[in-house]
Structures are given as structure tokens and as C-alpha cells.
Amino acid sequence: MSDAETPTMPDRLSTDPGSPFHDETLLARGVGIRFKGEEKNNVEEYCVSEGWVRLALGNKVDRHGRPLTIKLNGLVEPYLRS
Image (cartoon, rainbow, N blue to C red; front, side, top):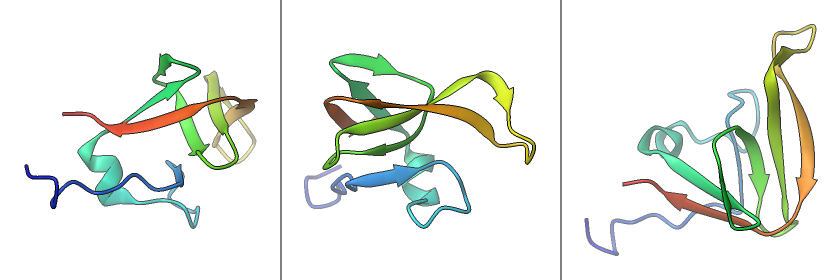
């Protein structure tokens, strides 16, 4: 894939289909997140400009069936997995 075909990563992205920041096509390609230099696999949402991620808390869900999350602040680096 050439650089012209590589999309720039959005400033904010969410895995929740009800969110205005959800992008199914980008998520299907595989998005990786490095948070404070460490690879994270349980990221539900991130924002690069504000410097935060929302991480899922295991298998716990709220009364609507959505995962419970915790918001952490720090350096966020999204990338496409190959």
C-alpha cells in the first residue's frame, strides 16, 4: 500500500457504534494504540489532542450492556496494524 492510500489516523475514535466518533471501515482494518509507550488491547475510545483513552474494565458491563470503562490521561499513539 502506498502512502497515498494510507489514511491518517483520526484525532478521536470509538468502538461504540452509537458514538459520532465511530468509523467501522477504519476499525475493520485494525487500529493499534500505544498509551504511554505501552501497547493496549482493551481501548474503547481515544483522543490524541486531549491525551486520554477509555479502557474496558474486564468483562464488567453497565445496565445497558456496554462495557464499564476507566479514563486515563497520557500520551496516545494510534496506528494501523498490518
